[in-house]
Structure formats: structure tokens, C-alpha cells
Amino acid sequence: MKILIITVIMLLNANAWALPVLNKNTPGAEDVTVFPDHADPNLFYLAPKAYVISKNDAGIPNFSYFEYRVKGVRHGFIQTTITAKFDTAQLEEAKNRIRAIFPSAQFTALAFDSSSVEFSDTLKPLIVANDCNHQAGLVGDEQVCSFEISRKGINVFRPMLKKGITITTQIAFSISGVKQQADGTYINHTNSYNVAGRIGDKELANYPELFIDEYGKVIKAEFNEEF
Image 1 (tube, rainbow, N blue to C red):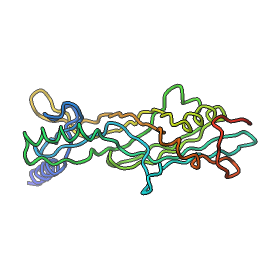
Image 2: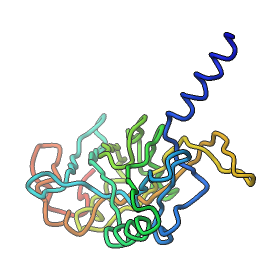
Image 3: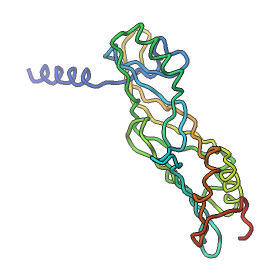
Image 4: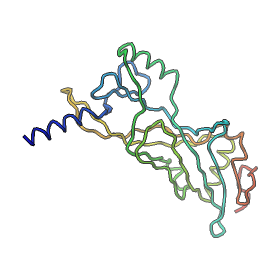
């Protein structure tokens, strides 16, 4: 009797959890990534196309850059808040196609277990340390990313950012869900989902006040003239 009760509870709990099918894209969503739910035929999970710098209520990028010295050596510190970016037009078209198949379709953000920012091999030597990793959340949540750059990094990052040139990274998410097997049954599955992360854009060049030197003054020059 006890075994039967435990089995029933486990089945009820399994059905109560909403889990995306990670090896299957929803019919009608050929141009964007929309995962179906394993149990609810009307529930779908949206995945972003990229992450970009978010903006405050005044439209100013949530970004700051300042320089300081460690034992006489100049360092830089960058902090920004990034947010998910969807291709609105493609997403709405996909939603309409999905609703044509599933009239009661509901859409929600994809959940993740953890996330991290992966810098390219070219940028890694210029970064002293970074704090861009996060634990469980939704892919639509804003995420804070900060990193310390070396003296050499200053002469790479500062001119790029002040000119409005985008620094591209990869945002890696660990996603828990299920995998559909050939016979139609599901098994637990964890997948890594990567999207582009874009730090900086052409609008950043319009806000020189976001770049501060070690004396608290606005940095006007693009390159670092002194070390």
C-alpha cells in the first residue's frame, strides 16, 4: 500500500511540473526558437535571439566604465545590465502561426538553472576577472555583468565602446527539461542554450559621461595616453 501511494505521488508531481521539450521546436516557429511543453499542448517557451544593454526610464544605457590604479598600474572596470532581445516581427509571425494550430496557445519565458558569459579567446587575456554568472531565473530577466580589464584591455575596450562598436560575447544557459525519444516517451534532459551577447552599441557613443577616469572626471579621449 505504501509503495502504491509513493508511486501515485511521484506521478502527480511529474505531471505537475511544466518542462520544455528541448530537442523539439514548435510547428509554426521555423524562424525562431519556441519549445513546446511536454505535458500541456497549449504551453510554449520563448527563447531570445540575443542579449543587449538595457536602458533606464530616461533611455540611457545601463552601463558604466571607470578607471583606477592598483599599485600604480591602471585598470578599468565595466558594469552593465543586459536584457533579452527578441526579433519582434518574426516572433509575432511565429505566434500567429502557432495559434492557427493551437488556438489556446500560451507563451512564457524559458527558465534556466544557471547562466554565464563566455568571452572570445581574443578578449580573455584582457579581462582580469568577471562577475557575469547567475543562478536560476528566466531568460527574459535582466542580468548584471561586470568585469575588470587590464591595462592592455583599456586600450582595446575603451576606444571600441566610446566609438559605439559592439563587443560580442556568448551567453550560455543551462536548461532543464526533457528529451523526446523515438517512441514518443520523454526522459529528463539538460541542455546548453547559447545566444549572442552584445556589450556596447552605436548609442553608447552618445553618452561620454558614462566613462569616468580615476579622478572622477569624464574621459574624453578614446585611447589611454598614460599608464
